[in-house]
Length: 154
Image (cartoon, rainbow, N blue to C red):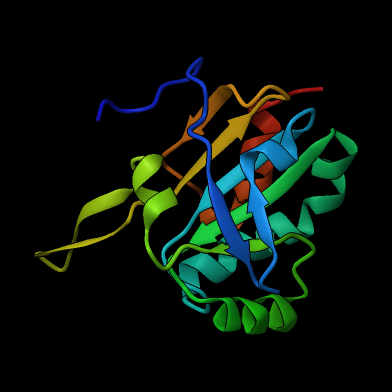
């Protein structure tokens, strides 16, 4: 599979969010979407990232963005993560890694010299038609909302 680029149509997906409801890319048609992929609930980098997005949520919403997070954690784990940090956006439980693979964010990673498979933290900013406007691969976890807002002036 070739790597997704800005201008590409985002891959269609369906998944379950923390409360068991099905969501799909089609549900966001007509809205701008920040689709962010992160490795694991309740880890330092992921917690910093979602808290940055939570703290910037009002401004992102005011600019017309919806937010949707995706990780391989299960629904129950997502429920606890959302409650603990009072996250105002849903999280997809992609335990099958189908969505992660479709977006090219599941693959080889290195940590302390060891290679393993995992989520390569990334954010896709989509327009109202599901077209990719921006891809952020070097996510600034502590300042991710500002990173997105700086990319999307106005």
